[in-house]
Length: 340
Ligand code: DAH
Image (cartoon, rainbow, N blue to C red; front, side, top):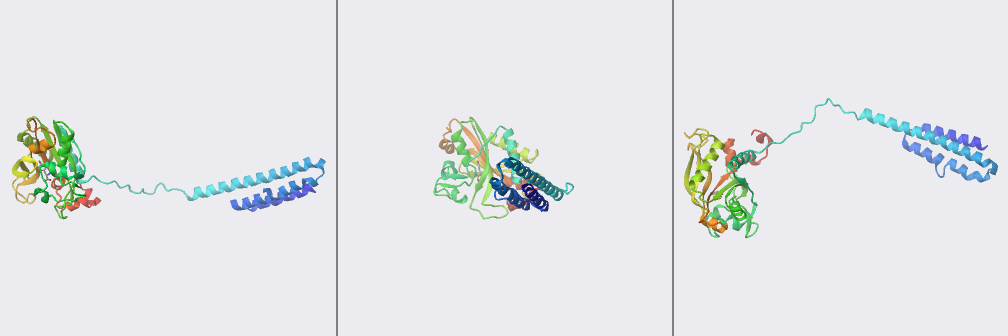
């Protein structure tokens, strides 16, 4: 009796398992036949009705049946998983012959290329590259550079104020002061960086642009050192034939001060469209560091002297790469940038 019943359960289970087409159906069969409330468990529960001497035998039959169903079930599960895997392998193939997506690499900015060239030249002459903050104290940007509160030079360099004492620096010259405060002479440094002015945007102006400051402080530094250094610099930057011309100028933090022109590297000085017929192109401001500035920075002007200069980086980039509108430098258009 019992044996037939068990055989019947086994057959029913096998046929359910065979009918199963997905894991849910298989699981349903597991619950029906092997689960806590399943048919085999029900039989185990009715063992008390079996005569004690028959119990081991019946118990064995129940176990055999359970094992048979489990084996069938596991085999079906394995088969199902294998089929699923085959299906995925067939569907998720990659066509390795397809052309790859282009990986687009950016391009160095003309400002960066020009700056690296300038840095290389000065580092070659023993200069150190230093940096100062873009958000600067009024003291370093003006006061310590001999531009007191009511000086007209402050109007020419109107900027963005954070508060009365803190502003966006209008020039890299404050790095001169910071360097003198931090280091003892001899000092040979350049300080590149971003500067700000309350200027309208046009072909030659931007409220944010870049300068490269330079300064040398030591015993016995003269204007000849300034001329020799800057002449060598422009020869390396624009070519061996480049000539320089110094025009007297005024900067509050240098005395004497000058602006330096270079002979036009397009026409060699004859005058062309590029140099607007002048033959010369203005390139930087410079001068001997004012004794007052040295003193305020803690350097004895009786013992030391020095020269300083300030170069507009964009101006160099525009000249070197013959770009006629500064705004192009700030658009970050890859088609423009990748030409340099
Ligand atoms: N800071 C000046 C400017 O922004 C440029 C300059 C002139 C820097 C003369 C110097 C210098 O170091 O000696 O117009």
